[in-house]
Length: 85
Image (cartoon, rainbow, N blue to C red; front, side, top):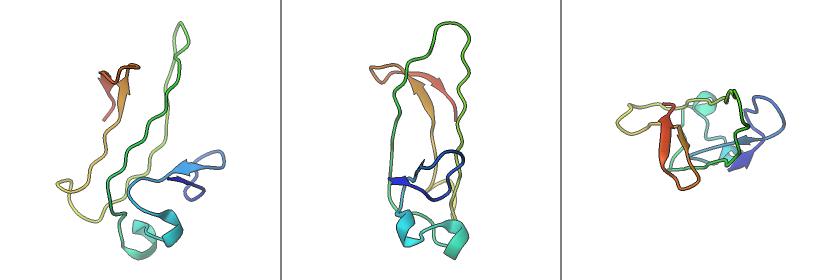
């Protein structure tokens, strides 16, 4: 979901696993987001030395058994080239 809540820089953010317009934030009311989500951004890496940086905000009230996050670098076919976390 594209949102304006918890923007790190810029004006928009991506919210996974809930609905930020309904105040389902861990910090606001001890409720964690419900559901499964995924999203990706396709981009071209310039030739030479490049650095990828991004910001993420974790939110859970239970164990890693039920909640986790993964980040990968993939090629255009979806093959994982590097696991970030």
